[in-house]
Image (cartoon, rainbow, N blue to C red):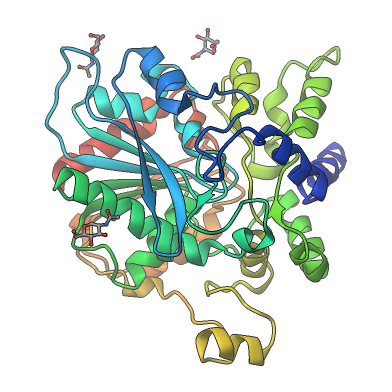
Length: 411
Ligand SMILES: *[C@@H]1O[C@H](CO)[C@@H](O)[C@H](O)[C@H]1NC(C)=O
Ligand SMILES: *[C@@H]1O[C@H](CO)[C@@H](O)[C@H](O)[C@H]1NC(C)=O
Ligand SMILES: CC(=O)N[C@H]1CO[C@H](CO)[C@@H](O)[C@@H]1O
């Protein structure tokens, strides 16, 4: 089956967590300071605001926030839209998903990209970038070439990155904010909300491709990767970041794209995400110039644990002693989605073709939210959408972003 061989090739490329990646990175970042403030493969050193936002006619500010565990994260703010448009709506924080970064929100034309649409509709837009992505490689004492820098999973993204970003926006604007997460960005927020965090400074949260449970995931690549990844856990953990070898992936995809008869390069991500209906294939090259981004191997293993065990729990150190050391419990504490306060405004938008946020797993989450106040929970199901349509879909403006803004107006 073509799907399986593509999966295996992609998997191979994706799992090259190797010193080669680190060496490339070292070269690329050789001229940068240790906080990695000016990174770069394809975006010039002047940063995301200058190269991707101001060029579109929008004002933009670069910000940084330091997490309680020392990671220095970059954020971009689009405080208002183009001249003459509405202003005065509350801040909105956008949190990207796994192996993406904040730039992923900005890759479509302005009338199809959520940050620009929100800004033109009067919102004060903030874009977060998780630790380990190219604009958030700084740390107060660690270097991103050190293994110690990569000792985290999404537990830390939920416990440190998310509160820092949300709190920073709240501090700077003196307002409560709305939240939009995609994929892992929803997992971070669901985890924090289930622990009663951030409720006093968030107005609402819109979850696109919500990820909580992964036990029934249908993505072939992830299922295979979970089995192989866990079998080789100790090997991988001895390495550093989980670095999709971008150059290889790009070459591979470009190579396939120029073959005669292949004019739909989007099909290459299908075995990972499910068949996205609505990507603009002529933008694939631009997307690959910026994505994928790195994450930690520990994060991937944490996700693999959720896939193979069906759990929604903190990282499992694999033995009673280590779990006792970290949690004072023999097994990792669970995140209990039924504890998300019933009056917190939530929008869940999921797709029928999504193989990472698959319908069966989303149903488990919805079952857990059964007692939620009915006027505080909005669920949207888009039959033809897969994982990436929610951020890259050419019609996401109408199908998803307009409903998000209508939901924000209610809360
Ligand atoms: C927000 O403000 C509080 C109170 O001044 C301060 O303690 C905290 O460090 C600030 N947090 C961020 C992320 O800016
Ligand atoms: C797809 O992208 C191309 C190149 O950026 C653009 O010219 C075209 O209008 C886009 N198509 C749609 C449906 O948005
Ligand atoms: C939503 C909105 O008001 N959009 C407008 C923002 O400004 C541009 C350019 O001035 C208009 O073309 C949009 O319609």
